[in-house]
Length: 612
Image (cartoon, rainbow, N blue to C red; front, side, top):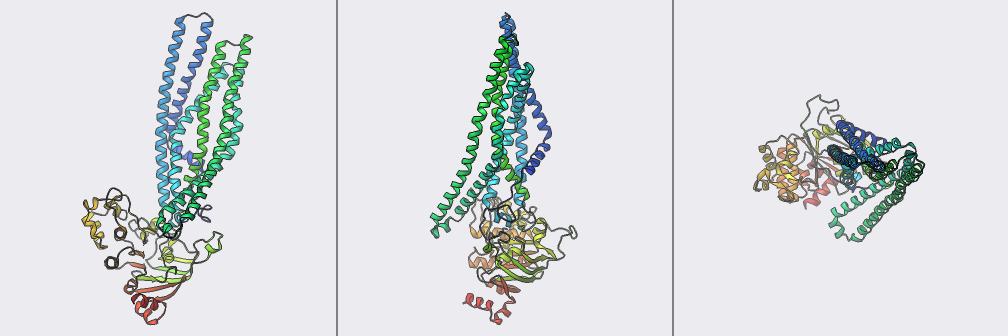
């Protein structure tokens, strides 16, 4: 079961006023990051402890080397030098092992955490109302679920352990220089001269990387729309226009990436200079103090080695600080999905068992559907006068439980739009659409999916077996029920598959054609067992004979349920209990087929034109 995409996605401001999905603000992003860390606090503590021990072991090498220099200058023997060299080797081996296990712990933390991020993203994406996805465009959602989640995953997997190791090393190295000699420690603080360049960079980087991510999403959306409509582009000769639009999107994407590249080109050289300043300062000041007998040569060498070693962890921190701006912007976009609307305009995609009576205060009292003075505009609130224009004008309609209602009318009359409102995909701008006295669009998604199913011309075959595709609607259904649902919609082809219900569908397996995919969607309706089914040209891809056979089979299966059929094939209207005629967004006629033909109005004209 799918919801109809009635207009292409577009990018713009954050929902609901515009079309782009929300982006989390820095405070929300930080809170989300802290929650992820707290959920695996023991792993983080272990990682920090191992990093501290590894950094402490790393301090021994330069200090012992300074001792060796002083020992040699004072006339010490080879035995002492060898003993100190063995200690250096042991400390180096200990540092290697501790750092290895620290990174191992960090990578385990990163993989567990990124699994949570991916699972949360999938849950949030599946919970998005269909109308929100349509307005935002699949390109933005795809870019967030691929490039942005991958960026966050790389940071959690690699940056967290690397930065922890580097931070521990830097703190221990600076502390060791101060302990050796406070004056040399002051020289070592010269490394912080690069903080001005870092601050300049940080003030600009977050916005620049958000702009880069938005440009990437817009490009992905444009390319996806062009690829999906390739035949239309070719048929209408739109190649040059689509190519020009793609080139503009690519150019905008290039400009945003050039901006972030410029920021890095300023930051990195400035910090490289900051690495050299403290080493030079220690050598000059330490040389002067040694010349006056204030400190030994070994102390000067040890301090210089410590500060020289400091460049590696600081370079690591700087590298990941730059990467963190990119991944921080990506995480803000991923986390922003949690701020998208959840209840208004939810698409009835996955169906669950019916709730027991009284299980929720919002459970409809019955199956009666009421449409009262409904007005609807697709771009309501966008500020675009053309988009703000109503496509439905004061529609009133009552659908009785168990009734078969056909909605007919010329193309563009508002039939599919009315179907979307009845299914809760969209909410009316004015007026109300209720089921059992409860606004359809205000129902909890799970409750809505138990009430109404919308089946459209669009369909989707999921990767997996035929059984997997059917059990989406009824996870506990037995094979007999699955086969019965296929038989009910006339899907005889399923019995001829080589592995039956275990036949893989899609790439590498059976590839259903359009009519078979649509029958598969209709079989899900049978398994879902809702009280109201909205069929929006649901058999349009079937040939007339198969469509008629399928409609008759469905009619028998759906007896006693409310069926609202939006159709151009007027034999559907002939079989219905009542017919609603839509013209220019208004409900102009309502009655039985015979009454409307006898009235000689708009429906009669349609019937005679189609029948002839």
